Image (cartoon, rainbow, N blue to C red; front, side, top):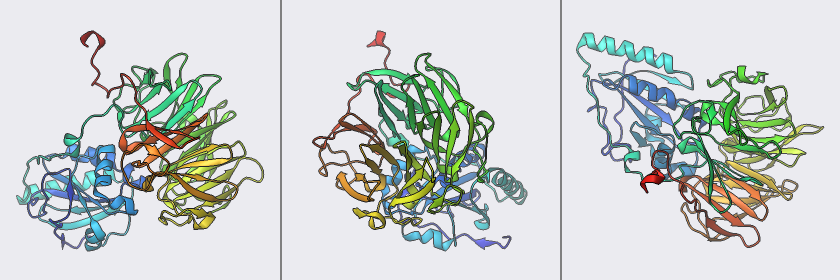
Amino acid sequence: MTRRVRAPELPQNYTWLNTDQPLSLKALKGRVVILDFWTYCCINCLHILPDLKYLEQKYQDSLTIIGVHSAKFNNEKEIENIRQAILRHDIEHPVIVDRDFRVWEEYAVRAWPTFMIIDPEGYVIGYLSGEGKRDTLDELIQQLISQHQEKGTINFREISLKLEKQRQPITPLAFPGKVLATASGLFIADSGHHRIVMSSYEGEILHLIGTGKSGLTDGAFHEAQFFAPQGMAFDQENQILYVADTENHTLRQVDLKGQTVKTIAGTGEQSHNIRPHGGAGLETPLNSPWDVVQWGKTLFIVMAGSHQIWQMNLESSMVKTYAGNSAEACIDGLLTESAFAQPSGITSNGQELYIADSEVSSIRGVGLIEPQQVRTICGSGELFGFGDVDGQVENVRLQHCLGVEYAENYLWVADTYNHKIKLISPNTGNCQTILGDGSAGLKNGQGQNTHFFEPSGLSVMGNYLYISDTNNHAIRRVDLNTFEVITLEFSGLCAPDRCIPEENR
């Protein structure tokens, strides 16, 4: 695409985030502008955020990136939910809320993510879609800067922005993604603080695992680093915690006895090989592992980035694709023929894996014993097909479900974008709402007279259900006899770098 087309001006009367005033292309004349068309549920959109951060830091005085948030799901149209996503993913560029796809249509966009490149004179000079475009964008930006320096049409200056995180209070937990209840204690993936918190059931902090700064570092608990960790599995006998270290694209092993962390799979780089394959754990790149479950000597992993289910042999340390042909879809049948759509939660009853398949808003079953088949337990099975309807099998509607937990012949499901907790029979496909009235908020109480805010994970221990209530930065506990919901308190827990040393208290 080489023809110069004047870039359509951005709506000034729409909601803008990460800035105290709307930005106009006219005012940005003299700078390179990239419009990033994204939506916060989309794993591909999340994968490119580190690339954008790299570019905006490299070209602070000549590049402006503007996120154009064009929502897939109804829940993603809510301004506060978009603001929370900006905070959760540490987005530091302005974002316009593209209601009704106006900007999307004016720029003739067809896919998430798409980058529209605008030169310093206000002309669209090209676009790119998909992941892995950092080097291409970097080269293109350099060329534009060089060309417009010669023409005298570039204006080097830094732009000051009012970021959402500058207005956000700091909380002890930050966007906890998953929670795991075990006989040894409660493990919390404190995703926004890049650490694992272990507590007793009375709220006493037993271990803080990780420095609280994002990174990929093995070693002792106080020096190890994670990057937005999510799902966990616990080997009670050996006191080993397995962690899906999502944004590091790795699996980590936490040894409670030795109080050390080590990487057991992944290279730290995102895999772009979407064909079913495998190899030695530490030599095989992974793609956004989001949750894990242990079955004997095998870890099963939902690989959200490649739309597959993977497995790791804990004795041989080999990893490989278990199910999913990498197409983003809902296809049942044989393991090799099946397809998933950003699977984000996993649990098991020992006969079958149960998957929260977020982009098709469905619960899937994956056989562990012959015949090893994939089935859809409930949900529409359609890409971006969603709603909020209890009922049976294909009549059920969920909205971007992220968490699932098997307990006593039923599945507890975090119906994330509906702000509800639902109970599903894997045998009949019957689904019913148990907790939450669908309103985003933080309200304790009983049953459906409660509020959650994008809950993402859950875990059962005894008579209690524990919920990672992600956007409330909280862990909720449900008495399964009465469905009474409370919010847990953790004594002495504080955000990284915010704790006051004991000698100064």
